[in-house]
Length: 402
Image 1: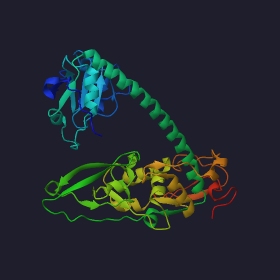
Image 2: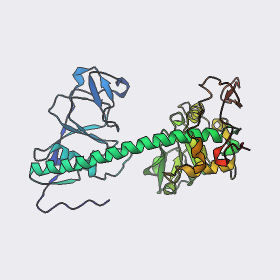
Image 3: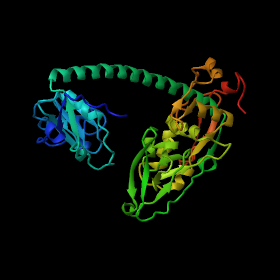
Image 4: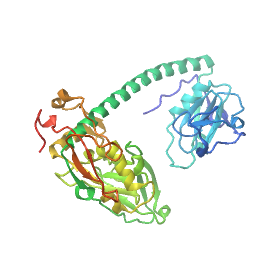
């Protein structure tokens, strides 16, 4: 998005004159010392405005407010007008010049498109910037008021969208339960075997990396890494449509579908890449499974938050239901294409389902019709059961799944 040019009547200042750094002389609260409740909020370079709390009153910033908080590693920007303590490292405190309305300066910072340097420090990028502003402070305030009026409208829309997504997720969970009701459970290796595509590293070349967000939030792009910086790190080709996991943070839902825009990027040796067999499973269907409560438990068993042998990822057992149903849910909920469509009309009369799935590892054994699953992650191979609806409305009301 191109930024509009400032009017000629506006003034301009280099960043080093537009703002000054404020030293946090009261010390910093370590991330491990954050509390869920306390006397003083802790503000760090993370995404959330408040990262935690502390009862250490000696850590409270003793300088006039408001201040602008800039995440030196994360590029997150916060406007703080309440007493707080600084958390962890990478926090830069800024106070704008008296010519600038603090919120005008804050929104200007947010408009910048700073290049992502990974976990390197980004403050040096700010020092190259030039801020334009109207000399009249009241005009700056009017601009701020217009921005905040639009921002409040955006927040209302975002909240409505989140509520819609939560409702859709509930419908999908029930639909997924129906699809898997009479499913056969098979090892992942028989459904979507691992595929390794080693990269032959060449001196002088750079390789753009791919990252996986936790909690099923998809992929993100990392800066390219030079061959000389790889050291002993091994990298692998990743193709669109692959199902990928981070074997260290699998317990945190680090699973994603590789998108078309991810083509040409590489993954580290910590990534587990799986490709579903044709006419057996689809990538979006398996991805959805791993974002359910049961799927997260399965990932936790496979990763345990430590580097593990990739063979362990072949042992958990996954539900394999009718291929037609898998295609339906893949089209309905497809992170690979970045959109969700409406549920099939045939499903609507039976929603919401009368019974939703629960994790076999933590739910009590229900009564009634059930199917058995062998928990391969359990050394005793204890057999657990859970009840599901016996019909699939996508295949016709009252028609049993084959």
